[in-house]
Image (cartoon, rainbow over all chains, first blue to last red):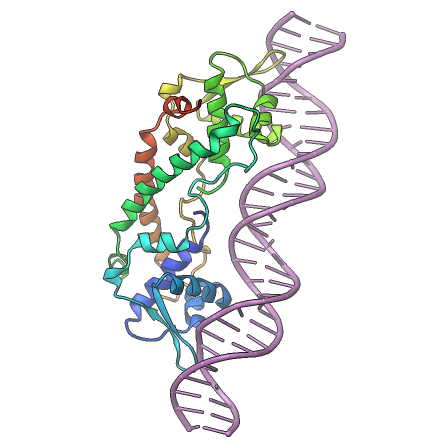
Length: 136
Length: 136
DNA sequence: TTGTACTGTAATATTAATAGTTACAGTATG
DNA sequence: CATACTGTAACTATTAATATTACAGTACAA
């Protein structure tokens, strides 16, 4: 993974944790994060697909957590947001005539997987609740 | 961290490990990785600054490892290449009037640091020598 | 039953990051 | 002193990330 989407998602979830049972509109979230509401809605869409938030359409609708902050972990956020390799592939076309080039991606893959496993284990220990408690 | 520079650096180092004591020119490295030689030289410059490779100018010059593959770890490569936060900051300007926005970056920072620590520990266990041995 | 306040999403534009290119000066060797 | 390298600057091209506009769909509430 690689972009600010993790930060945006954590920010959204923290605001929702803060709002408890209320339905929070995306405009409000966008205001705190200071980014475009459409981006927020896209991220909400992703979090929704991963079962972390629930959205309600229509007037007095909005967004809220799908479960308690105690039941949401940073590893869930990571998994929801991740799409690329943690450490990034080199160009996808190393020279196949080179003994190293032709098989390096395979070996990089397994290296990345192990490293990511370590990262995930660390994030599994951190709940949204713990994160939210830090705020004064 | 986030880009393909890690992969490029590992690729370079693996080729140098393969070449043992020889001085390997950047054109050759670029050929195997299948990227531009100037990019390779830039990465070599970075690896040199971090004490991982030695370069020799002039005719019959080139590049080689600064120490044995047993003494180079993936964590060294990670440190050499890393410049941004592992998981990426959200926009640097969350709303300072929001209780969450105004302090989220601080908390994200400590979260990232812990996660990165876990990642580094995993990479410290993997030497360039072990990585190179995997190639047939 | 209709205006309002939301979500959802497509299409497009803008900006930033990454990668590639050209060009050339510097250096050591043979 | 020609050659084969490195080192680096300046520029261009490409791709990815982010922002904007626009509007359809939905549910509540007056």
